[in-house]
Image 1 (tube, helix red, strand yellow):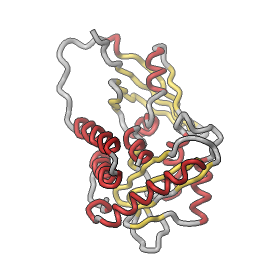
Image 2 (image 1 turned 30 degrees about the vertical axis):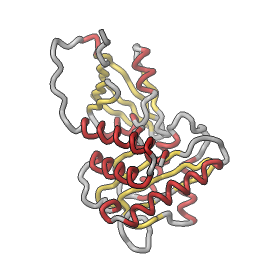
Image 3 (image 1 turned 180 degrees about the horizontal axis):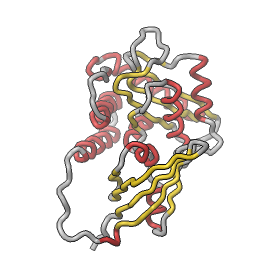
Image 4 (image 1 turned 120 degrees about the horizontal axis):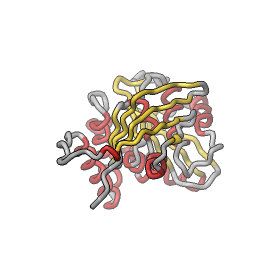
Length: 264
């Protein structure tokens, strides 16, 4: 369950904005392409879409598992998409797909992929409570249910411990934080411009080198910029003041970034 759990841990679980199969697969494949260890010419989007024309990767109960293989070395990677009302996927039972697990499979990781997928499929087939994703209203609730599946199907203490930590962080994030005491230091608020390209990679333009380094290293930030006007991540608060779109599927986000206070 390593790849599935890592996707939840690193922010590669997203709410899909469109109820369209090709758009959903393209978006999830772009998340994998944005992982720094993946080669820039991996062509994951093309591989996923081509694979779907050959065989529908539906595994039942509103779950689908598209994938693409590569001869490159590397880790098994996963991205997870959820759509609250479901996506028509071309499956014969006509059930809308609410969960898409998209996998990138290096040649040396094919056995790991088969073990992970079989464990997931076995547990969602066996327990209706686990496979039913029709009644969740937000992404945090979905994340908690997916972590239940990890815990049920992994059987490994280290996976269970990681799942417990992610579950705790998810629940903490649902509780509004009290206002910090003391006066706000205005030097912590820095303007920044974030460019998102067609591959969902980001480039941060700022005079603060720390902000550039930290934000460019954050997984999943490009997706959150598209959806959230205020983002709290790794101690930073990112306020998106304005978004501009350009040719070749590029976007520019005019932001104010509030840095975490320095530790005394």
